[in-house]
Amino acid sequence: MFVRFQSPAPNGRGTYPGVFGLVNSLAEQGLLSDEEEAFRRENNAWYEANFTDPATVDPDVYRRDVNPAAAAWFKASATRLIERVPGYLAILAVHDVECVRLESADPGRIVYEDDDQVVVVPHVAGQGVHQGRGGVRRRVSGRMVADERNGWSWVPM
Image (cartoon, rainbow, N blue to C red; front, top):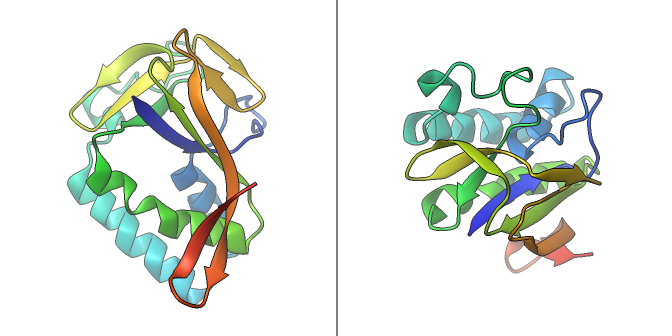
């Protein structure tokens, strides 16, 4: 099983930005608070140190003319990587940027794989959901909301 967090709507290139790209875009626009920017920098650095960037292994992996609409998916077993995502979702929620969680046994044709992730070219892309032959097992849309006891909670929509 594979997991991806992405925008439900395509960008200007027709691709669906992932959770990291969405938060980094807010940072590039200067929209993050000091605390959000500190979180982003610290956690992006952690991911860079603990997670392989597929483009460093295969420079062509995200080339649109080689692998159109290629997107990275976590392996469900990569829990140490997935457990940091809620902080990014919290930032998106504060800025009213929607992000969906997708799960699929077959999100597309695998063009890169390591212990933690795959990069796939989707079999069919539509309405923000990559649907592989195995289908999207669960599409969860929601928002992070403030919770007095737990800090942040994911609320399905």
